[in-house]
Amino acid sequence: MNQEDLYWFTFILVTLLGFFTYKLLTRHRSYFRLLRVPFERPHFLYGNLDDVLSGKLTTMEKIEQFYRKFSAHGLFGFFNYMTPALYVRDPTLVRQLLQPNMGHFASHGYFLDEEKDRFLGGQLHLVKGADKASQLASFLTPVFHAPSNLSAMDKTVQRCCAALVDFIASRVELELEMKAIFLKHTLNTFAGIAFGKELNTFQDDTDRFCAVASGMAYGTNPVQVIKTMAFYLAPGLMRTIGVQFTDRQEIDYLLKQFRSTASTATTNSMGRFLKQANDKLNTSQQLSDEQLTAQCATFFTKGFEPTLNLLSFAVYELAQNPAVQQKLYDEMVTSGLANSASGIPPYERIRSLPYLDAIVQETLRKWPPHPLLVRECTKPFLIPATENGDRASIPLKVGDKLYLSVWALHRNGDYFPQPEQFRPERFVGGQVVSVPHSNTPFIPFGIGRGCVGQEFVKLVVKVTLVALVQRYTLQPGERTPEPLKLIESASSLEARDGFWIRMEPRVAK
Image (cartoon, rainbow, N blue to C red):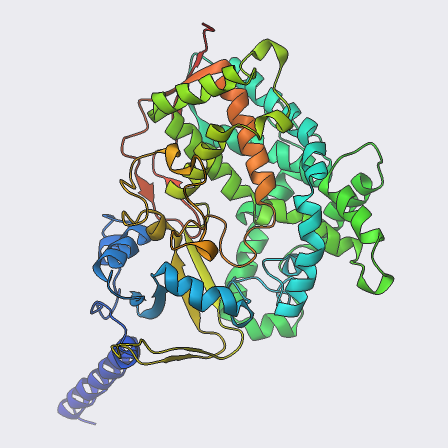
């Protein structure tokens, strides 16, 4: 081959490669046009993520723009790079489409499942199959929601709050980054609630439980990071050779902790309550100790980050809104809960504070713990055509996903006037209710069953807030900007510069 032929061969080869690469990258470009779903023309490389990649917005904020732009439509299309994502934006459509058909959308589309990890994959939010999930939910819900079980956890939460207050008292003259402090507090609390483990990470964080729990909450175990990459790159090979995501030694360690707390009559923990409920079932319906341990681990895999964020954002908003903070303190005074000398009040008295509950609800609205909900189709489903004919019916096959931006719905001014303002008064007197009963889309804990442990989250948050406001006046620190700047995060809300708060000892009037 002479030089000229080589030149033309190279030119044709590069052209063909470029053409087929372009076609590969743009193969989904007509996806929404064929469905007659409104969308914005994407860039062939980064889709609709231009402002996200430039750092101007997070993905949540970009999608919120689309919610406003396509306000006349129940559905719209968004390109995450070149992967099409179908968003449900109308709460009426959520109520009509998803609520009565949850059997078709039983999966949350999580990376982990029972094939990748028989231990964690047995948790309620990861278990496959509507029947299996329903059976597990019917067992867990009464245990998690029983008022007596919540009350029994009160001493654990009070003990952990006392350790938190003592730690802050030793650093009260400093400006504190509260999320880092609440991380230790949440770890202490959930270790006690779930496994009956008494930790005080403010004094000593070398206990092995801390490393195991942090690995479950954040996936910081380096071996798990390598396994995650391998499952993405070669899922078939990983399944064939039987690799499991969670290390067997960690499972055995947690199993030992579970059996210890379940067998200790003087310990009030979720492990013990689950064991007691399980023993009452028929032998054929009973869960193994390992399965029960996995449900206790849900506090860290599913509940840890939402609780941590809810605490952090609630304290931030109280510091930024002194009138709200004062109104909460006045409610505590009226209820006889403001005297710090008498200790942290029991939850039975705290849970009856309506304005405290409204503060928690408004924090959940403005800073939802799960800003993006994903539902994966597990049985073929047909989204009906619109009555006016502007959109045809949309057939969904197994594996297709529907997305719902809780962030955008909660910040829609049509449902929540002045959505950027922190106004707990929205939730006083039952003014706001959830999607199943109203067009007002307040769904902080998801749709369908929601979060089975949400009452425990509220228990921890409410007692912690009362313990802090009882002794301190919260003031915004200089290092936290206003308005708060967020950074991109895979599944939760992250403040770019942290939550810096000054705690001034409260002077009783």
